[in-house]
Image (cartoon, rainbow, N blue to C red):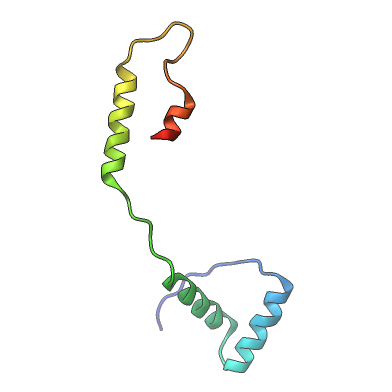
Length: 85
């Protein structure tokens, strides 16, 4: 038997009803139905890809801002400039 990790979740009453019905019809445990549903759902999701080049660009931007002289009265950039990047 493969090792499994115990998880405790909360479900809605309607989900409980459906879960019990599906498990009974399929002749499997409720846990097996949940595992199958998780596998089915996760198979359609791709992991986000990390854009290293974009991160390097942002690190350079941060480094450049840190080297700017201190401005009397506050910063020399606006928050909106960050969103335009």
